[in-house]
Length: 311
Ligand SMILES: Nc1ncnc2c1ncn2[C@@H]1O[C@H](COP(=O)(O)OP(=O)(O)OP(=O)(O)O)[C@@H](O)[C@H]1O
Ligand SMILES: *[C@@H]1O[C@H](CO)[C@@H](O)[C@H](O)[C@H]1NC(C)=O
Image: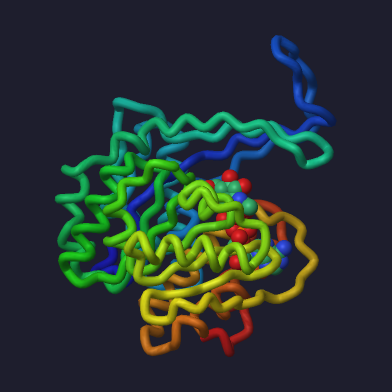
Protein backbone atom coordinates (compact mmCIF):
# COMPACT_ATOMS: atom_id res chain seq x y z
CA UNK A 1 0.00 0.00 0.00
CA UNK A 2 1.41 3.33 -1.07
CA UNK A 3 -0.49 6.60 -1.04
CA UNK A 4 -0.38 9.04 -3.93
CA UNK A 5 1.82 7.60 -6.65
CA UNK A 6 3.69 10.17 -8.78
CA UNK A 7 3.91 7.86 -11.78
CA UNK A 8 1.15 5.48 -12.84
CA UNK A 9 1.81 2.86 -15.51
CA UNK A 10 -1.11 1.17 -17.26
CA UNK A 11 0.30 -1.78 -19.13
CA UNK A 12 1.60 -5.30 -19.46
CA UNK A 13 3.41 -7.91 -17.37
CA UNK A 14 5.05 -10.89 -19.06
CA UNK A 15 7.09 -13.75 -17.69
CA UNK A 16 10.03 -14.45 -20.02
CA UNK A 17 10.90 -18.14 -20.33
CA UNK A 18 14.28 -18.18 -22.03
CA UNK A 19 15.97 -21.32 -23.42
CA UNK A 20 19.43 -21.07 -24.95
CA UNK A 21 20.84 -23.67 -27.35
CA UNK A 22 23.50 -23.78 -30.09
CA UNK A 23 20.83 -23.47 -32.77
CA UNK A 24 17.06 -23.02 -33.02
CA UNK A 25 15.02 -26.23 -33.52
CA UNK A 26 13.38 -27.05 -36.85
CA UNK A 27 9.64 -27.71 -37.06
CA UNK A 28 8.83 -31.00 -35.31
CA UNK A 29 12.34 -31.32 -33.88
CA UNK A 30 13.36 -31.64 -30.22
CA UNK A 31 16.87 -30.49 -29.30
CA UNK A 32 18.84 -29.98 -26.08
CA UNK A 33 19.61 -26.53 -24.82
CA UNK A 34 22.35 -25.61 -22.33
CA UNK A 35 20.76 -22.81 -20.34
CA UNK A 36 17.33 -21.77 -19.08
CA UNK A 37 16.18 -18.79 -17.07
CA UNK A 38 12.97 -17.01 -16.11
CA UNK A 39 12.88 -13.22 -16.28
CA UNK A 40 10.37 -10.50 -15.51
CA UNK A 41 9.32 -8.57 -18.62
CA UNK A 42 6.44 -6.87 -20.37
CA UNK A 43 6.87 -3.29 -21.51
CA UNK A 44 4.53 -1.77 -18.94
CA UNK A 45 6.16 -3.50 -15.99
CA UNK A 46 9.67 -2.79 -17.30
CA UNK A 47 9.01 0.94 -17.55
CA UNK A 48 7.37 0.92 -14.12
CA UNK A 49 10.32 -0.89 -12.50
CA UNK A 50 12.87 1.53 -14.02
CA UNK A 51 10.95 4.59 -12.76
CA UNK A 52 10.68 3.00 -9.29
CA UNK A 53 14.41 2.16 -9.13
CA UNK A 54 15.21 5.82 -9.75
CA UNK A 55 13.11 6.74 -6.72
CA UNK A 56 9.69 7.69 -8.07
CA UNK A 57 6.58 6.58 -6.18
CA UNK A 58 5.03 4.30 -8.77
CA UNK A 59 1.78 2.38 -9.09
CA UNK A 60 1.20 -0.36 -11.67
CA UNK A 61 -2.23 -0.95 -13.18
CA UNK A 62 -2.23 -4.36 -14.84
CA UNK A 63 -3.63 -7.89 -14.77
CA UNK A 64 -1.83 -11.16 -14.16
CA UNK A 65 -3.15 -14.70 -13.70
CA UNK A 66 -4.05 -16.42 -10.44
CA UNK A 67 -1.07 -18.69 -10.98
CA UNK A 68 2.52 -19.02 -9.77
CA UNK A 69 3.90 -16.61 -12.42
CA UNK A 70 1.29 -14.06 -11.36
CA UNK A 71 2.17 -14.50 -7.67
CA UNK A 72 5.87 -14.11 -8.47
CA UNK A 73 5.17 -10.95 -10.45
CA UNK A 74 3.29 -9.38 -7.55
CA UNK A 75 6.26 -10.20 -5.33
CA UNK A 76 8.63 -8.63 -7.90
CA UNK A 77 6.66 -5.37 -7.78
CA UNK A 78 6.71 -5.35 -3.98
CA UNK A 79 10.49 -5.97 -3.93
CA UNK A 80 10.91 -2.95 -6.22
CA UNK A 81 8.67 -0.72 -4.06
CA UNK A 82 5.93 -0.53 -6.70
CA UNK A 83 2.37 -0.21 -5.40
CA UNK A 84 0.30 -3.30 -6.26
CA UNK A 85 -3.05 -1.76 -5.23
CA UNK A 86 -4.21 -2.08 -8.84
CA UNK A 87 -2.44 -5.28 -9.86
CA UNK A 88 -5.38 -7.61 -10.51
CA UNK A 89 -5.20 -11.41 -10.53
CA UNK A 90 -7.69 -13.27 -12.70
CA UNK A 91 -8.64 -16.95 -12.76
CA UNK A 92 -9.84 -16.58 -16.36
CA UNK A 93 -6.44 -16.43 -18.12
CA UNK A 94 -2.81 -17.25 -17.46
CA UNK A 95 -0.18 -14.60 -16.69
CA UNK A 96 1.28 -13.26 -19.94
CA UNK A 97 4.33 -15.24 -21.09
CA UNK A 98 7.02 -14.87 -23.71
CA UNK A 99 8.58 -18.22 -24.66
CA UNK A 100 11.96 -17.25 -26.05
CA UNK A 101 14.47 -19.50 -27.84
CA UNK A 102 17.94 -18.06 -28.38
CA UNK A 103 20.84 -19.54 -30.36
CA UNK A 104 24.57 -18.97 -29.89
CA UNK A 105 24.54 -16.09 -32.38
CA UNK A 106 21.92 -14.34 -30.23
CA UNK A 107 19.21 -14.88 -32.87
CA UNK A 108 15.83 -15.72 -31.42
CA UNK A 109 12.32 -17.02 -32.02
CA UNK A 110 9.61 -15.85 -29.65
CA UNK A 111 5.95 -16.68 -28.97
CA UNK A 112 4.08 -14.20 -26.77
CA UNK A 113 0.80 -15.20 -25.17
CA UNK A 114 -0.62 -12.00 -23.69
CA UNK A 115 -3.18 -13.92 -21.59
CA UNK A 116 -4.34 -11.95 -18.55
CA UNK A 117 -2.96 -8.70 -20.02
CA UNK A 118 -5.86 -8.65 -22.49
CA UNK A 119 -8.38 -8.88 -19.65
CA UNK A 120 -7.41 -5.53 -18.15
CA UNK A 121 -10.56 -3.53 -18.85
CA UNK A 122 -12.58 -0.36 -18.30
CA UNK A 123 -13.78 -1.58 -14.91
CA UNK A 124 -10.18 -1.89 -13.73
CA UNK A 125 -9.45 1.63 -14.96
CA UNK A 126 -12.50 3.01 -13.16
CA UNK A 127 -11.23 1.54 -9.88
CA UNK A 128 -7.85 3.20 -10.45
CA UNK A 129 -9.17 6.48 -11.86
CA UNK A 130 -8.66 8.32 -8.55
CA UNK A 131 -5.01 7.30 -8.47
CA UNK A 132 -4.46 8.17 -12.13
CA UNK A 133 -6.01 11.61 -11.78
CA UNK A 134 -3.77 12.67 -8.88
CA UNK A 135 -0.52 11.39 -10.43
CA UNK A 136 2.07 13.63 -12.09
CA UNK A 137 2.65 11.33 -15.06
CA UNK A 138 0.85 8.39 -16.63
CA UNK A 139 2.56 5.99 -19.02
CA UNK A 140 1.07 3.42 -21.40
CA UNK A 141 1.99 1.17 -24.33
CA UNK A 142 0.19 -1.25 -26.68
CA UNK A 143 0.75 -4.67 -25.07
CA UNK A 144 -2.74 -4.53 -23.52
CA UNK A 145 -6.02 -3.98 -25.42
CA UNK A 146 -5.39 -0.70 -27.33
CA UNK A 147 -8.86 0.67 -26.44
CA UNK A 148 -7.94 0.33 -22.75
CA UNK A 149 -4.68 2.24 -23.24
CA UNK A 150 -6.58 4.97 -25.07
CA UNK A 151 -9.16 5.19 -22.28
CA UNK A 152 -6.37 5.50 -19.72
CA UNK A 153 -4.79 8.33 -21.76
CA UNK A 154 -8.14 10.12 -21.83
CA UNK A 155 -8.64 9.79 -18.04
CA UNK A 156 -5.18 11.25 -17.45
CA UNK A 157 -5.61 13.99 -20.03
CA UNK A 158 -8.95 15.09 -18.52
CA UNK A 159 -7.27 15.49 -15.11
CA UNK A 160 -4.29 17.40 -16.49
CA UNK A 161 -1.90 14.51 -15.81
CA UNK A 162 1.06 14.42 -18.25
CA UNK A 163 0.93 11.39 -20.52
CA UNK A 164 3.74 9.41 -22.11
CA UNK A 165 2.64 7.01 -24.81
CA UNK A 166 5.00 4.35 -26.17
CA UNK A 167 3.29 2.83 -29.27
CA UNK A 168 4.93 -0.57 -28.83
CA UNK A 169 4.42 -2.98 -30.44
CA UNK A 170 3.37 -0.66 -33.26
CA UNK A 171 0.19 -1.17 -35.28
CA UNK A 172 -0.10 0.50 -38.69
CA UNK A 173 -3.76 1.49 -38.22
CA UNK A 174 -3.31 3.15 -34.81
CA UNK A 175 -6.44 5.04 -33.71
CA UNK A 176 -5.63 8.71 -34.50
CA UNK A 177 -6.86 9.76 -31.04
CA UNK A 178 -3.63 8.31 -29.58
CA UNK A 179 -1.69 11.18 -31.17
CA UNK A 180 -3.91 13.82 -29.62
CA UNK A 181 -3.96 12.41 -26.08
CA UNK A 182 -0.17 11.86 -25.80
CA UNK A 183 1.85 14.70 -24.30
CA UNK A 184 5.00 12.75 -25.12
CA UNK A 185 4.90 10.24 -27.97
CA UNK A 186 8.01 8.06 -27.64
CA UNK A 187 8.77 5.39 -30.24
CA UNK A 188 11.78 3.65 -31.77
CA UNK A 189 12.88 3.61 -35.41
CA UNK A 190 10.78 0.63 -36.52
CA UNK A 191 7.69 1.94 -34.74
CA UNK A 192 8.12 5.38 -36.34
CA UNK A 193 8.40 3.62 -39.70
CA UNK A 194 5.26 1.48 -39.21
CA UNK A 195 3.23 4.49 -38.08
CA UNK A 196 4.33 6.88 -40.84
CA UNK A 197 5.26 4.51 -43.68
CA UNK A 198 8.52 6.47 -43.92
CA UNK A 199 11.77 4.46 -43.87
CA UNK A 200 13.83 5.41 -40.79
CA UNK A 201 17.54 4.58 -40.98
CA UNK A 202 19.43 7.70 -39.89
CA UNK A 203 18.79 10.50 -37.38
CA UNK A 204 17.69 12.74 -40.29
CA UNK A 205 15.00 10.20 -41.26
CA UNK A 206 13.83 10.05 -37.64
CA UNK A 207 13.36 13.83 -37.79
CA UNK A 208 11.22 13.52 -40.92
CA UNK A 209 9.12 10.68 -39.46
CA UNK A 210 8.82 12.73 -36.25
CA UNK A 211 7.51 15.72 -38.24
CA UNK A 212 4.84 13.46 -39.75
CA UNK A 213 3.82 12.38 -36.23
CA UNK A 214 3.62 16.04 -35.13
CA UNK A 215 1.32 16.67 -38.11
CA UNK A 216 -0.93 13.88 -36.82
CA UNK A 217 -1.42 15.87 -33.61
CA UNK A 218 1.40 14.88 -31.22
CA UNK A 219 2.67 17.67 -28.98
CA UNK A 220 6.15 16.22 -28.55
CA UNK A 221 7.77 13.31 -30.34
CA UNK A 222 10.88 11.36 -29.33
CA UNK A 223 12.29 8.75 -31.71
CA UNK A 224 14.91 6.57 -29.98
CA UNK A 225 17.82 5.42 -32.13
CA UNK A 226 19.69 2.83 -30.05
CA UNK A 227 23.40 3.69 -29.79
CA UNK A 228 22.67 6.98 -31.62
CA UNK A 229 20.52 8.27 -28.75
CA UNK A 230 17.36 9.93 -29.98
CA UNK A 231 15.72 12.75 -31.90
CA UNK A 232 13.17 15.12 -30.34
CA UNK A 233 10.83 17.68 -31.83
CA UNK A 234 7.63 19.37 -30.75
CA UNK A 235 4.66 21.24 -32.16
CA UNK A 236 6.27 24.46 -30.86
CA UNK A 237 9.79 23.67 -32.04
CA UNK A 238 9.43 21.58 -35.18
CA UNK A 239 13.18 21.51 -35.93
CA UNK A 240 14.31 17.98 -35.01
CA UNK A 241 17.12 17.95 -32.43
CA UNK A 242 19.47 14.98 -32.22
CA UNK A 243 20.44 14.15 -28.61
CA UNK A 244 23.31 11.63 -28.59
CA UNK A 245 23.78 9.08 -25.81
CA UNK A 246 26.94 7.90 -24.07
CA UNK A 247 29.23 5.64 -26.07
CA UNK A 248 29.40 2.35 -24.20
CA UNK A 249 30.29 -1.26 -24.91
CA UNK A 250 26.80 -2.81 -25.13
CA UNK A 251 26.37 -6.32 -23.67
CA UNK A 252 22.58 -6.73 -24.03
CA UNK A 253 20.29 -4.00 -25.36
CA UNK A 254 17.04 -5.85 -24.55
CA UNK A 255 14.68 -3.51 -22.75
CA UNK A 256 16.77 -0.36 -23.32
CA UNK A 257 13.76 1.41 -24.78
CA UNK A 258 11.71 0.63 -21.65
CA UNK A 259 14.51 1.84 -19.40
CA UNK A 260 14.50 5.11 -21.36
CA UNK A 261 10.70 5.55 -21.06
CA UNK A 262 10.74 4.70 -17.34
CA UNK A 263 13.54 7.20 -16.73
CA UNK A 264 11.72 9.90 -18.66
CA UNK A 265 8.57 9.31 -16.58
CA UNK A 266 10.70 9.68 -13.44
CA UNK A 267 12.18 13.01 -14.60
CA UNK A 268 8.82 14.41 -15.74
CA UNK A 269 7.31 13.56 -12.35
CA UNK A 270 10.20 14.54 -10.08
CA UNK A 271 12.01 17.29 -12.01
CA UNK A 272 9.24 19.00 -13.99
CA UNK A 273 11.28 22.19 -14.25
CA UNK A 274 14.13 20.62 -16.22
CA UNK A 275 14.04 21.32 -19.96
CA UNK A 276 12.83 18.38 -22.04
CA UNK A 277 16.26 18.19 -23.70
CA UNK A 278 17.92 17.82 -20.31
CA UNK A 279 15.40 15.14 -19.26
CA UNK A 280 16.13 13.25 -22.49
CA UNK A 281 19.89 13.59 -22.03
CA UNK A 282 19.64 12.09 -18.55
CA UNK A 283 17.23 9.36 -19.70
CA UNK A 284 19.75 8.47 -22.44
CA UNK A 285 22.40 8.12 -19.73
CA UNK A 286 20.24 5.79 -17.67
CA UNK A 287 19.23 3.65 -20.68
CA UNK A 288 22.90 3.44 -21.70
CA UNK A 289 23.68 1.91 -18.28
CA UNK A 290 20.94 -0.69 -18.86
CA UNK A 291 22.77 -2.08 -21.93
CA UNK A 292 25.92 -2.83 -19.90
CA UNK A 293 24.49 -5.97 -18.27
CA UNK A 294 22.49 -8.99 -19.42
CA UNK A 295 18.75 -9.25 -18.92
CA UNK A 296 15.86 -6.81 -19.06
CA UNK A 297 14.83 -5.62 -15.57
CA UNK A 298 17.95 -7.32 -14.21
CA UNK A 299 20.05 -4.67 -16.00
CA UNK A 300 18.08 -1.61 -14.84
CA UNK A 301 20.12 0.61 -12.52
CA UNK A 302 19.04 1.86 -9.09
CA UNK A 303 19.50 5.50 -8.06
CA UNK A 304 22.31 4.62 -5.64
CA UNK A 305 24.38 3.03 -8.44
CA UNK A 306 24.24 6.08 -10.71
CA UNK A 307 26.25 9.32 -10.81
CA UNK A 308 24.47 11.67 -8.42
CA UNK A 309 24.57 14.57 -10.91
CA UNK A 310 21.70 12.77 -12.67
CA UNK A 311 19.50 13.68 -9.70
N1 LIG B 1 24.26 0.43 -27.78
C1 LIG B 1 23.83 1.43 -27.00
N2 LIG B 1 24.71 2.27 -26.43
C2 LIG B 1 24.28 3.28 -25.64
N3 LIG B 1 23.00 3.55 -25.40
C3 LIG B 1 22.07 2.75 -25.95
C4 LIG B 1 22.42 1.65 -26.78
N4 LIG B 1 21.29 1.03 -27.17
C5 LIG B 1 20.27 1.72 -26.61
N5 LIG B 1 20.73 2.76 -25.89
C6 LIG B 1 19.91 3.73 -25.13
O1 LIG B 1 18.60 3.23 -25.00
C7 LIG B 1 17.65 4.08 -25.66
C8 LIG B 1 16.59 3.23 -26.30
O2 LIG B 1 17.19 2.33 -27.21
P1 LIG B 1 16.47 1.79 -28.52
O3 LIG B 1 16.20 2.90 -29.46
O4 LIG B 1 17.28 0.65 -29.00
O5 LIG B 1 15.06 1.31 -27.94
P2 LIG B 1 14.23 0.04 -28.35
O6 LIG B 1 14.49 -0.31 -29.76
O7 LIG B 1 12.83 0.30 -27.95
O8 LIG B 1 14.89 -1.01 -27.37
P3 LIG B 1 14.59 -2.54 -27.17
O9 LIG B 1 13.56 -2.92 -28.20
O10 LIG B 1 15.92 -3.16 -27.38
O11 LIG B 1 14.11 -2.60 -25.79
C9 LIG B 1 18.46 4.89 -26.66
O12 LIG B 1 17.82 6.11 -26.94
C10 LIG B 1 19.78 5.04 -25.90
O13 LIG B 1 19.69 6.09 -24.96
C1 LIG C 1 11.55 -1.34 -31.65
O1 LIG C 1 10.76 -1.94 -30.65
C2 LIG C 1 10.13 -3.15 -31.05
C3 LIG C 1 9.25 -3.57 -29.93
O2 LIG C 1 8.13 -2.77 -29.96
C4 LIG C 1 11.18 -4.18 -31.39
O3 LIG C 1 10.57 -5.37 -31.83
C5 LIG C 1 12.08 -3.63 -32.50
O4 LIG C 1 13.13 -4.53 -32.75
C6 LIG C 1 12.66 -2.28 -32.08
N1 LIG C 1 13.35 -1.70 -33.21
C7 LIG C 1 14.61 -1.33 -33.17
C8 LIG C 1 15.16 -0.73 -34.42
O5 LIG C 1 15.31 -1.45 -32.16
